Length: 260
Image (cartoon, rainbow, N blue to C red):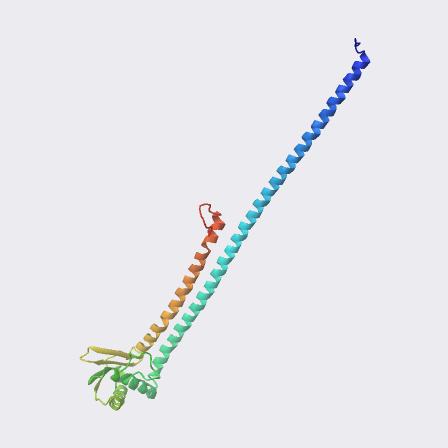
């Protein structure tokens, strides 16, 4: 039979048990600490990665917004410059026409040159003053009787010009025409004549003012077209940037198959 343990032996066994329990407790604590450190490191890395991605995403968004704003500003400045250039050209053209009107008023003061203009206007549009192919006088009408209307103060000079035009008309066409002169136009115009034939059914305006107006009508639409084209280019450039602007403002649309 085994004998019972004395006090010293009991104490020794208890110490062994306590040491074993402590050892197990320390190992368990180390395991818990290692696991906690690993989970902390994983969570920390996840948060850092998440925040880094958020910062990168915000940076890219702001970068794209800045690039889009820069493109819009550049496009706006380019088109404004183009419009200013075209407007300056149009203003220059208007100044040229204004100077031309002033020059036309002075033209009638030069009797020799003005007489040539009147004769050319009655017969046909000469090469020096030609504006359109439809502006021709006697050679255009081919009528036996033509009335020439002019300013009252130009009547004498116009009658001389009409005689010269009649002679040239006969030499060119082999026909004769009766030309009468009326000083019935207003003195407000710069000069020139109007031709009437066919019992007043056919009228041709060969006044200097009308010729200048016809020239303006031919040139002004060109500048209007250029201005319109510049506006359309600006609208098209902005329309091309709309998808990019939409993406920067609202992000990617998951419902779109093609993100454009």
